[in-house]
Image (cartoon, rainbow, N blue to C red):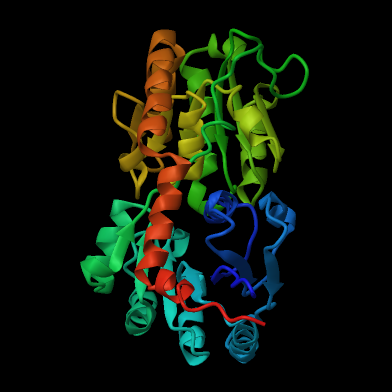
Length: 390
């Protein structure tokens, strides 16, 4: 008797590189029971060795190398691939992949999901008429939507016009076993960089424009001006690569603060580095739900984040951290100073952060949420069809 394979999900994304959305996909695929679903990842552009974060050895990747401009030949390549793979579900993510909904419908894929994970710097508030027209054109083809924050859920309902019953809001989960508080001596940066008594102000993420890391660097430099003794204790660590890294390094050099900061680029030991920080800062111009905030909270760190997107849904003011205005280095510097001068505040908010993650943002809750959405599309009934014998 032949055993029916689990249903296949085709995840369609623009590319698969280091990023919050991709990290969420890694966590989902790694923690979803193998017997429930199979997975393939289709990249309209390309993928990097970040795919190696997926621990399953049965997840295939495809890169379509989508041409720039108005060349629509990729539509046919995607249609042909979907016809060959014959997935049970197509799951597109974000605006850059939403056109895959049209192709999936043309290929006869009946179960179609679209996820919104956040907006980029070119449309921070989701008000661009051209982009929203595309979203509305795709709306009749999408069977169900997933939003990673309440902010995105409400935007889908009130701006894009999606019926509330067709949207599920599912928070990202965090691996609280891998991301845990530090339990040993501090070990971060080059030799002698940060003493045990140092205040390590850290951040992790793509150094893209939307993350606004120069604002954090300016605030750190301003902290050194306000509180000269901070040069002995305060250290800045930014883990990540991108267009803003060079700007940040130049700002530090001009302020004679290069020796007080460490910007090593992209790293694979994020969990180890993060737990050696004392305060986590995310200065973004816009966010969906930040995986790095959740990971930092899981490491027992207080959070300073801009009041944008889903950040207020994660950071409880005066309990797990502080919310600050966008692009205001003076305000951010004063906030950093508050933590620099108050070690007990760091400890108390850090402990509350860890408890909040354990209570509300578990990996198991995220997986259950996604499984529930997939089940709404009728896959269990399909799996219950009679098994054919050879």
